[in-house]
Image 1 (cartoon, rainbow, N blue to C red):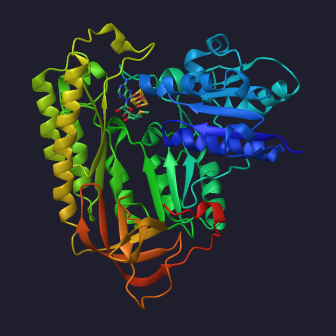
Image 2 (image 1 turned 180 degrees about the vertical axis):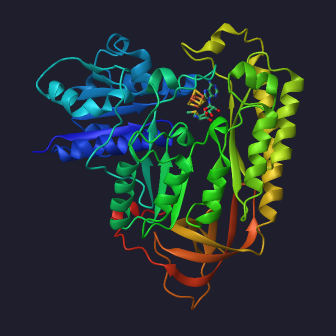
Image 3 (image 1 turned 90 degrees about the vertical axis):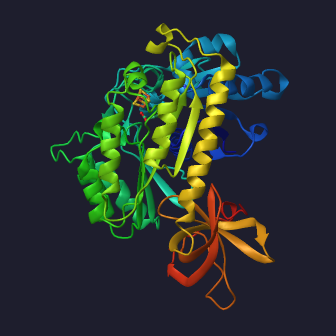
Length: 462
Ligand code: SAM
Ligand code: SF4
């Protein structure tokens, strides 16, 4: 009987996609995937350590299976916590027999073979690599959006961040390999691609073609069958006007840029080692605002970085108004191992950090409500993701996503074509808006049908 594995993923989209590739490797070597620990012979946790709370989650999971519930199973810790804690995990959780950081995933099959041959403890923890993790077979969990990692690791060393210590040095895939994967995905019926990297726009093509990030975007946009291309995350320091030009010239490139600012204060940015000022950041925003079509902008913000004064925080609030973000991810500063900011005195009480976070989120909520009003009455093309559990005045409600990556829930009036099916594109008129989503009614039949066949399990009610 085939051996079985269960994989649980914490953290960012890069982790989600790494898990898809690990699952692909395991399936191609004869394992069968199961969706609970009980049925699994091999249990893998792909972990995140960006903030302390995220890192703690895996140890709480592992403790659930320490005794008889884990008997006869092999446990593995992958990803950022694996890299950060290293072989100490074997001491803290003796039932773990595999510890692999993401920079060693290209050796995953070899490490798995050691484990299968009966080795009690196997670790892959070297950060000294120029390789990227490429697999022939990826088990894609997201039925609509296919992820492609174009760059791994990070060389930036922001003062608060563990990523350079957990994911190793920056290394890009060749443009040929990225394009080949894009074509394969289009042939498999995917219409939306999302390029991934800690800093996608720091991409440096290692091949002699020396394609820039903006040129790579244009080339992927020209792959027949691809209707939407997204990319995340862009680093403000490496953001160029050519990226906006590429979006202008290729409607397939989505109207959305995630450009994390972290703080609106130049003084805080300098202490964070972000390598740009508030003014330089705003200059990039002005390039985006000059685009021929409106591009939605989102950001990441950290409140309570060591030494952040009330005045510094006010500058961040003012920046929210000035930029007019369509969404943000906001975090309280969390001290992380090895990082430079541990040297800075962290005197802001946790309650004050919490207060700043709430004030920031409230301000952003109002900005979003205002911005979303501008969508009222407009017609947006959505990629249909599925059926909502909630009904709208007795009618089935469907969930779609706009090019700006906003959720647009919609109903279909009688007589307007077939019932929507996941993966197709429809036009929807926006009739109501909230701070986090839009609602409306379909005004077209199918614009583009999907050639992909979605397995029943992926057509769950959302
Ligand atoms: N490379 C991206 C950039 O530079 O914008 C960010 C990638 S990081 C995985 C995602 C986000 O986590 C960051 O943008 C930052 O807002 C947040 N983050 C990272 N370290 C943090 C820390 N120590 N405390 C709180 N938030 C943190
Ligand atoms: Fe972390 Fe800074 Fe690298 Fe982003 S650029 S991953 S925040 S070190």
